[in-house]
Length: 320
Ligand SMILES: [Zn+2]
Ligand SMILES: [Zn+2]
Image (cartoon, rainbow, N blue to C red):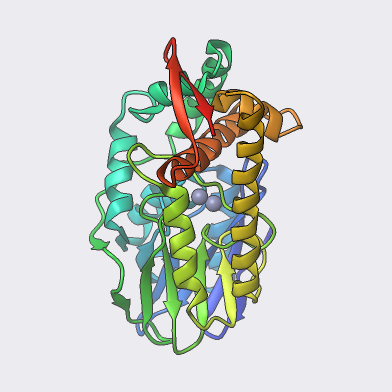
């Protein structure tokens, strides 16, 4: 079982297990003048809770010493355990306003995101596969709690801690109200899922928004910061955020070019594009992520005037 490790004076990192392919998620305890702030919560599973419980005991930290819980975003691996931890700690919950709105919509939806049905139909996803994706959503639903945050940020605020103020940075793209925490004084960045060492974060399409554009724009802002240490939600702390940002921008440029080349052969749906762009067989949930990733790229290119769509029986075929 993993234990808290000091990754910076005043900052403890703990790796919690996850029940899916992405094997683990990091949560951080940042010392406050009085008590701690917990950044992210891990997933609502028995192994994750027991890991956190024993790591706290080993450090001699009581639940009630956690005064604030900050969620970088509302994905199940980050907020799953939050309802339980809020009860145990009595902490105040803080997150970005846009993320809180997004969470409310997801947590109160009948089964899945209100726009999911339309997105699947337009993407040309076969019904049988849709049903399989649905099963997964029912499974993760229990991790979405309709929480009422005590503090809502819009970006730019500063959270006082024992290591100096941490600035809230709104970095939408991976999710609508994703937020990072940054110390200009210490040059450290709690990057959530915005910057991950060995993988590029998934960019999910949202109706009426250019999520890839927002993601690239937020990376641009991060590139302007001085960062010596990136503390990501998955993987080990690392440095070199500007090189990472360059690589990630190139990755998305190549993805866009790949889509253009394919639809240049003949118009295709997002579902067909996924089959061609991911050569390995994807699990239903990964197929879902891939569909939304392709839609985000198509939306981005549509706004640039590089692609357009035509509709046939509800399915969108994409043209250069
Ligand atoms: Zn995430
Ligand atoms: Zn994550």
